[in-house]
Length: 146
Image (cartoon, rainbow, N blue to C red; front, side, top):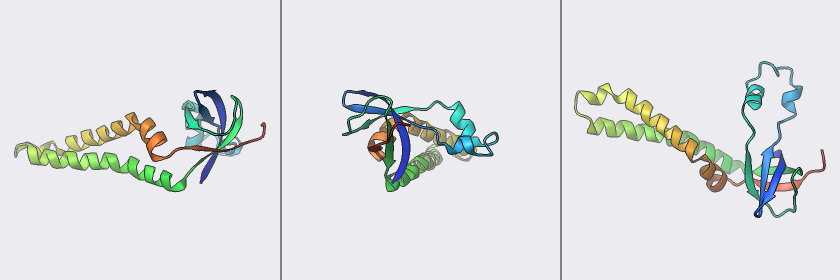
């Protein structure tokens, strides 16, 4: 299990909304100014998402969230393979359906367009795909006040 500390932002309709806490390692590292991870953590907004929870929690509570390792590996494989499969199918269809002089001339453009459409599809469906079908984050325990 991969565990991460999070904070409860709100509780509504039987769902607990949580937001990940930034790791303390980023603030203590000597490479803080040149680190890509720290830079992305500053620029990108933290996202909150709903989790089913049996524990009685309130907004502001610190919790430990866990994700199963095998499901995370399967999801990573899916995120990388879907765009590649889109690209290969698109190139195969273009080679079969385009007339003879164009089937080799436009294959790079078709490959790029179908690869990008695969990435777009993954991006648009990531809420459903990642949080509901592939893995469900679970609140393991409530942490003490920090």
